[in-house]
Amino acid sequence: MVRSRHCFPGQGGIRRSPEFQKAIEIKADFIPAWVYKGITLEQLKRYEEAIACYTEAIERNHDIADLWYNKGASLCRLRRYRDALKCFDRVLAINPHHALAQTTRLLTLAAPPNPIKMPGLSAVASNVPNKGKSGIGNREITRV
Image (cartoon, rainbow, N blue to C red):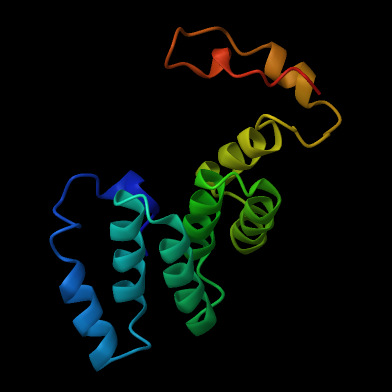
């Protein structure tokens, strides 16, 4: 299965959206069509619709870690951090070695404006070097 925009950035997903819809109409349980439609909607910043696509795919097979990851990533875009954490927890229940989910979960725990309390997070976060405007060190994750 594919992970959100991390695997296929800029490969024409937006132009292919009608193809995904047609595939869904032909075979509603075809999970890749739901996933690619969700990715396309994410690229268009239509996160609620993307979440609905991932939810549809999850209803068809709830044991695919990347479906849960994609849904969690879209929830983060909407700042629905508690719901996103549930998705990332599900990813890690399915695949405890899912590095992207591990990292994203920790960053979600620390997301402003109301970081979720987690013992030990501030100690880990304080060791992250400041890497400039694009680096993780600029996030205010030591406020726990």
